[in-house]
Amino acid sequence: QVQLVESGGGLVQAGGSLRLSCAASGRTSVITSVGWFRQAPGKEREFVAALRWNGGSTSYADLVKGRFTISRDNAKNTMHLQMNSLKPEDTAVYYCAARTIAFTNYNYWGQGTQVTVSS
Image (cartoon, rainbow, N blue to C red; front, side, top):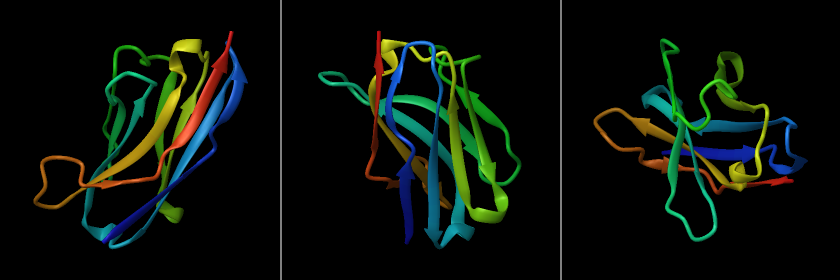
């Protein structure tokens, strides 16, 4: 089992920055990749960014490319999402997720953290 706990959400003005964190615990040795997703009210959950757990290659949704950065703190089994130049349309509940060995989809999810960007 893998447990994921997000933190760092909040309210920020447009153009501001926030850093989300996701602490992984449990059987972290079986994690192959981690990612961030978000879901705005009335919309489907969408992919934001992903990171290979060992190796560090990253991918981003076009909407956040150049503004968001996903990273990992190896010593703490924690990943981060640095969000800069935030826009009101970035408002959503942000979820971290992990994919483990033998799974093609993300199979562990955090509880979510609210990000609200005011105009």
